[in-house]
Length: 137
Image 1 (cartoon, rainbow, N blue to C red):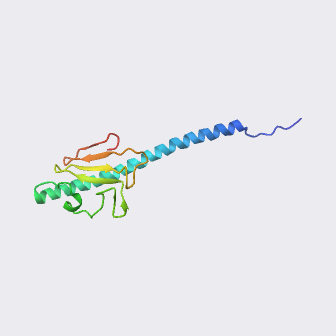
Image 2: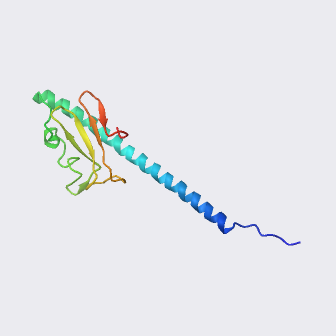
Image 3: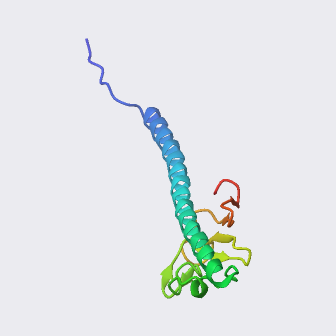
């Protein structure tokens, strides 16, 4: 009576490698979506701060900031004004309109762009209404 060796065949190993590769690809995509959502949450927090600063500016000058948020609202120079300023790199650039609505634009060139080449925008009005690119606000 001969003993048979129990081992994996080459076909079984190839199938396992393919399955692991597919699962890793799906996991990486899910990870990138989660990271981008967390960056969007950071932008929403910053927009909330800008909204408060806009209200303060309005109380003092009886108008909303005209878009020069860095100087008008008292933020440090360079922070979030451009995607890449003063040697720093940012995920978003922020602007505010004369109506008080503030915007967070996702940097697509310069700064720290998303893994996909598409950018998006998140808006916050003075009334507290969120809008922008679907799926990101």
